[in-house]
Length: 287
Image 1 (cartoon, rainbow, N blue to C red):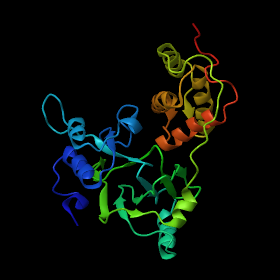
Image 2 (cartoon, rainbow, N blue to C red):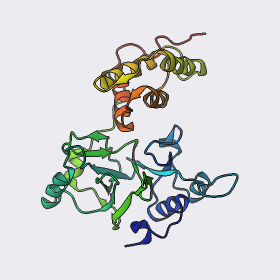
Image 3 (cartoon, rainbow, N blue to C red):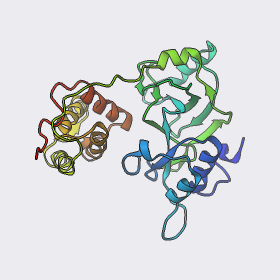
């Protein structure tokens, strides 16, 4: 097993990020130190596999030292992550063992997480759209990180514990069974009525002010419906789906107790957009 796979021999996070890109070519982005949360917004667009860009992102511009940002890996373009969860009563390991035994999945590049889970990484065939999924398609304890999804990259550290590669082989191609189980046609372009121009600075500011000053704090038991409701309200101000997600990420951190995972939040925002009845921007500012 390589030094990278063992989590040894790589002195800092910059070296680990560069090693991941140079070896696998995956697009990566920064996470907050000691966290799974993306640093900043727009990470699906700014993720990069350019070694020079990676070097700059993980370098302190004043000292030249490595920054301690964890590593986020963008999924859904060339790779999909099968996220095995073995905590809080879930037994993803048993499901994966059965799928391996039945040869529905092949062993592949695998990362051990600090919480006892695993990320199994597979190559996506060209032209196949794999959506994110939380325990519905493969069973409770198995999530799928597909289009606009993320996993924490190997070498990252949470509370002193490292995400470590435990199977160092190159990612295997998805089996035909897995493709058919997970694939979905590209989402249809839904024609929504739009009032005014989306993402005007004043519209974004009004939506942000609403979330900061008027939207309620959401507690356990009310977050699913509450996040859907507040995302729908944000669209009333005349913002795009991507801008709404960025605004809702800030709201989630500030007013959800505790915050929901980013993948769950993304699902709520997508649903608020897809199932919308009123025009987007119904409360937009019109010149």
